[in-house]
Image 1 (spheres, rainbow, N blue to C red):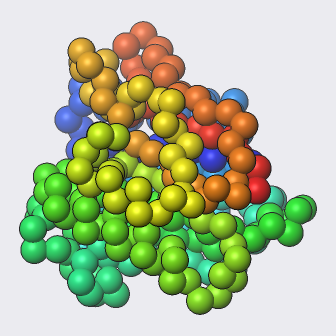
Image 2 (image 1 turned 45 degrees about the vertical axis):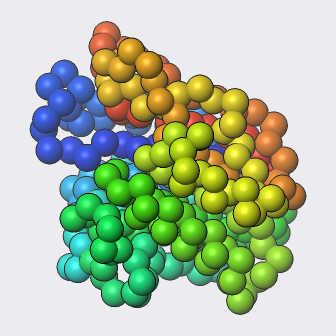
Image 3 (image 1 turned 120 degrees about the vertical axis):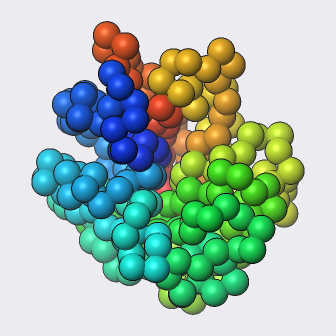
Length: 251
């Protein structure tokens, strides 16, 4: 199974030569060439979600916006129609009231943060597994700690298909040696499949030192065969301001 985490960059027309309108054909070509099974997108605005659904016709795309009206950015999950059945889907807010749309922790930015969960079955192998896709707060370290702790706790408390292995992907806005990432040490059964990746956020090539803030975390009964960055650049146009991270895994 080929799985990708892809911060597609919120589209407000602010990126000049790397505006979304110029990246669209590049993104489609890359996805068609790589043919991933599952893509975890972050920073998906409503019009971008519509574009994804109109153009990624081999995929079902699920998710909703993070504000109180279910608008604004999504953490969308795209999965191959021909390969997977959706058994359960959930969106919860990273807050003390996870089922209240638009809710957030007191110590975070004004942006609500969400996690999209999909319980999927591989049609061919019959394997059942969970995908969690999130985008942690960009300002508050304590909010990132709280959000990550909430997701990891949720993974351990699922009450259906409890043997289904879990995969957590997304933009954590945290470096590997940060205090918030120390939380993973409390969950030794969870492995950072992207540990060997040096950097993912490059700000459209402007970063002198690229920082790693995008991750794919999986339970240790999932074997990782290969990890790669989608670092393509076409005449100064990138896929996004983050390098998408792709893993080839086996349950």
